[in-house]
Each structure stands twice: as C-alpha cells, then as structure tokens.
Image 1 (tube, rainbow, N blue to C red):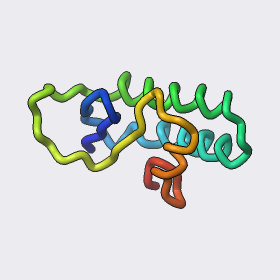
Image 2 (cartoon, rainbow, N blue to C red):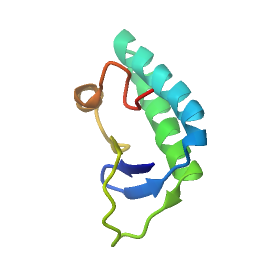
Image 3 (cartoon, rainbow, N blue to C red):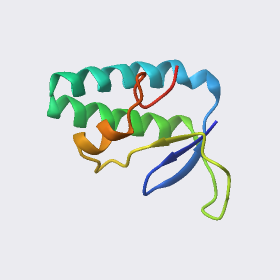
Length: 92
C-alpha cells in the first residue's frame, strides 16, 4: 500500500505492518476522544515514525496514487480530527 505523510512524501508499506499501525491508530483515536493532547502528540509521532521505519520511501519524482494519507508531524488535534473516519486514520 502506498502511504503519503503530508509534507514529507510517500512510502510503500507491506500489508503485514498494518496490525502494528492499527494499534497506534486506536491509541491516537482514544487520546483524541479524551482530549489528551500530550498523548495525542506522542502517539501521532510514534505512528509516523513507524510508517517511516517500516515503509520503503518512494523517490520524490514518483507519481503513485496514495491509498492512505496521514497528517504531518506538525498537524494539530483539530486538523487530524477532520481527517478521521469512524475507524481512525487507518482503515481496518
């Protein structure tokens, strides 16, 4: 799956990594619902770091359609809230 981190670029992630990412996504959703801004920031950073660590960066000139778009590290709680679906940022 091709994942874009806003403001950074794209990475290709194997489906096998989505269990780990979904766990972080669930934590992020819970922190957002409870208004835990420190936890939100910590978990968003952990989620983006996991995507960077587990994914294979695509070249900057690659024009692949992104199947998933994640907020950048500097996104606010309100900006991320606007991007959420019922399942969080990551489907599944």
